[in-house]
Image (cartoon, rainbow, N blue to C red):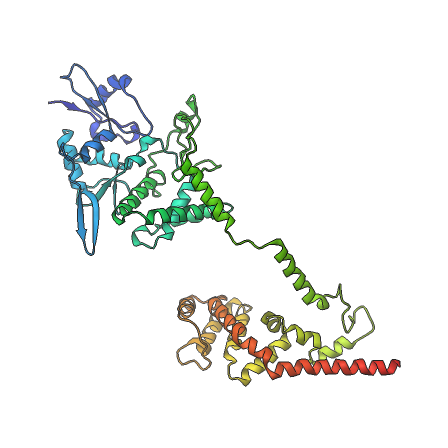
Length: 499
């Protein structure tokens, strides 16, 4: 009976069941072995073959597993409710194949060996991020040779950001981000804030390419890509099989790392995984790379950019509109009583009668009306005359809520809800379903900004409808004309006195 020995180039995870006579054999044969930081080496020692000790890599085992002619693991398409799961095998089939073809008698050793294979990403569960093998009906899928660790992958954080961003663009339940992936995406978005637009465009381009593929092919490729990142960016708490002892890295004669990008995007910063691999010649730029660069530059050209002339025109128009309200450019009328003996300004303020400039300014924007106390009063009177003042009263109530002491916030939130939003409210406002649903959720956890979405919606309604009608109303026009007549009468009287 031949002696079968399994040796893994990570002594800390050698299965306890293998630490017996096999260890002595491994030590004697270690000088003949070629170790790789990315490979799991399986040595089959047959004492009947004149001491020959062939090294069988894990890729050979995976190839034999998928070969139907030599009795590989049965790969099939499983039908489920309203869908099909293509190209899968069960964990029990893998364990049985390992025991049969590698002469393993203990199922525990077969499961352990299979888990080591899965930890390297050669086999992966289709519905779990934890790469381990279970001896049950769990479905597994074989990794594509392109993603095998023997290709010396050194994926960068920009590649990972493109992958996560691409996942968020596809509205599919199987592609939803896990909690730790969402946290990683947020962290990468902060780290690459300056180049995030470029990353987003790369993700969009990848999504467009994927949509052209067959549905079954796309489903398989998505799972294989996910498994690749589960190896290189594992779930928190799982062992990162791509890491290497830093002391071994420093002892290497050539510590240069080959940065091999998954999506053709290079990153200036250091990658997350500190794996050192032998230096390789840099890949030459191909026609496809130039095509991608041309496509990206064309998209940059087509971006909507505001011309400097338009910006200058906008600034000039704003300055000309507000020039008479700038005391540094136009002397104030009446003059400032703090620097002159004229107290007319205080008299006007006491009378609460708005000046012509003040009334004219209300026509610039609705913000000018709302930030002026007299303007708010005039606007509210107009809305009350049209029996539509609930929108403005709600907006003012929310503004007041933001200034309330924290101890009064909960009570005030409930009062606003009962007055404007509760079923059968006395002054019900008109909200769209999305804003109402979100506000209803916010009320359960009251705060100063509970009604932020509803307030923004009401503001847009008033700006597009009520404010325009207010400017066209007789109340505003009469107020504006009355001030003009008064100013015209004063000018005539002054001219007569001078004459």
